[in-house]
Length: 174
Image (tube, rainbow, N blue to C red; front, side, top):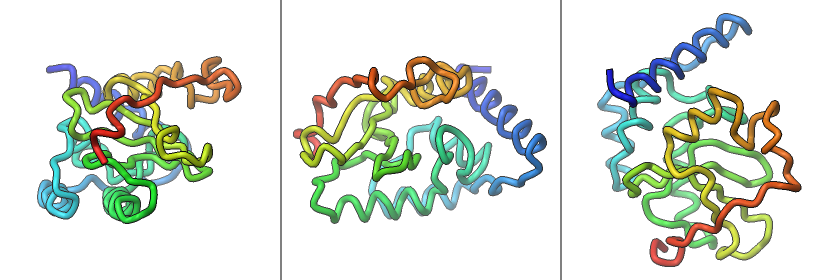
């Protein structure tokens, strides 16, 4: 079993245990056809790990903060943002709503599927983009083990101490 398969199993186990504990059902996983349809709309492929979350675990509702967005909502948010005045970068898919107009996003064109934080609250597009985690796998591991800044139990989550590096590729991707 490779690293991606192990991580998908760990996420699926946590999601199943959480759903049992809280007695709530999550959306069913998507089929390959639904992934292909979404990719056709947005014009790029989902990284294998992200596609695996949607096809093996469920169509959103689990993960950090309010959970992974359902794929159709992520696609809709991408299209809306691309048409907004924020000069949304190509290939950057919002995957989780962190509230206050902030999104965790996956750079689907990066080799590692790095996770970016979009925070428009400073009011300047050049300041809105930061590198949250160098890879989607690392972002998920941080959520699983409770060490990511967005985890309630993490000491790294103190908003006053959070300083993420600016995303250097922003200008070249708009």
